[in-house]
Length: 93
Image (tube, rainbow, N blue to C red):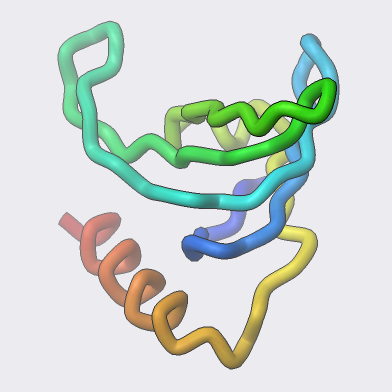
């Protein structure tokens, strides 16, 4: 399974790993260094654990290993469309 090519702010997503399954909403895409010192995109997902909102950062390069899936996208969200364009341009670089 491959990760989606575009991830928009506001997407409802689900990802599975050995630690468990998390369902949440993409709230940000940031650029930061990974352990190797390379600047990569990080997907910030907000989800709820025990009634408290938690933010989790996932490396864009790790999405393929985890079963990452967009489960809901608001097709009429114009801010999301602009964000998708920016993210696609970023991935081309």
